Figure 1: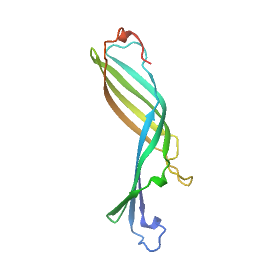
Figure 2 (figure 1 turned 180 degrees about the vertical axis):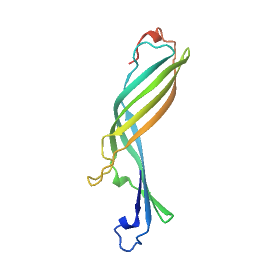
Figure 3 (figure 1 turned 30 degrees about the vertical axis):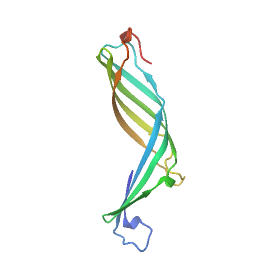
Figure 4 (figure 1 turned 60 degrees about the vertical axis):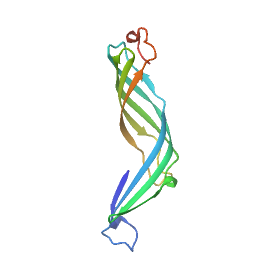
Length: 152
């Protein structure tokens, strides 16, 4: 997140009124999604994939950087934010067969935070973000009748 304010919004009398202040917050979370995945009907080489579910996260880092008149300073901001997050994720994708035992997975996801990230009731911040993922699935043995069965 990035906050920008001009000097007149700063409540310190000793600062000039024309200062511009930029504050940047960088939050890092280790997240664990639990997703319900659905692939409708039999597919040929490619089939659509839909998924939705909750996400729990644990904060592993929080930094704040303040820039005033071209000079900046950074510090740990862990005490300003909660130590965990809760949210929902949903998305769509394509599951494509690219070889006898290989599938290519491409997904687009949207995450919506359900919990205030600040560790105070005086400020409210909830995040939302898009993510794009790609992966390769290698089957250890050929699936029997894989094209004829739906994937759940």
